[in-house]
Image 1 (tube, one colour):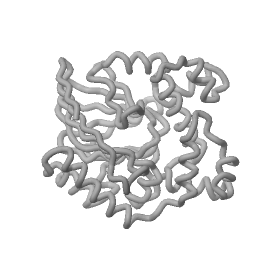
Image 2 (cartoon, helix red, strand yellow):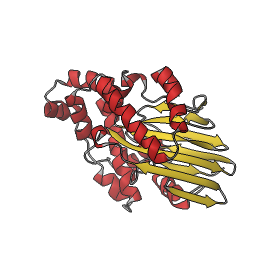
Image 3 (cartoon, helix red, strand yellow):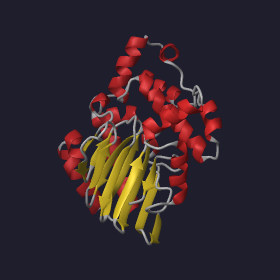
Image 4 (cartoon, one colour):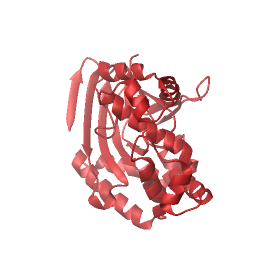
Length: 294
């Protein structure tokens, strides 16, 4: 567990891997307790994960940044965030706390028992997906003393849910892993041949169990590679070339369309530590967001 106290507030985070029986589909757990001095605003980037938040305190307001103007904001204490192809703005004023569960989308299909295309590019209340379980789980977790105890309870809950939920097709999980393996994801024809399905069958099952069709999923995978390279010290020009963009202008256009920032703005905000400690990423070593001032 790490705790920061600074002029911008108090920040507490605890992170752990789940039980081995849940890996690699359950990517990690993160407990958080934030008490910022004023409104905290954060840009959450496309991260290739489905995130569940079991909240214990106040709500966060989420704004979908697609469109001009952006879509209306919605406030949630506990939520499910599906696979996104663009950034969302998260804001809260006052203390918030809870537990985040980061899932590979094909595992989310099993755990949530719903078609992932219904959750793509959306953030919804946890109870809208899990019903009564979505209302009771946060309270049960909040009643357990300490992050370690809450993580252990989550292991038990998720292991049972995985045993009961609809299994994802191995071909879908394999296709997702192939898309995520490098900076230049394979196209649909190559991907289908590698998993032994027709393009039509792969597209249909992939969208059902991942949430996006293979082409936008490949965009997310390529962005993830670019974010890792930039935060690792690679130049924008080197990153654009390694990730297979036509040129640097193409890279800048795609990056801004998906993150609402230019590559240079992204790096400045990541390095500035604005509005709280950096990094606040949901998975260590994976750049998933930037804090904003104001």
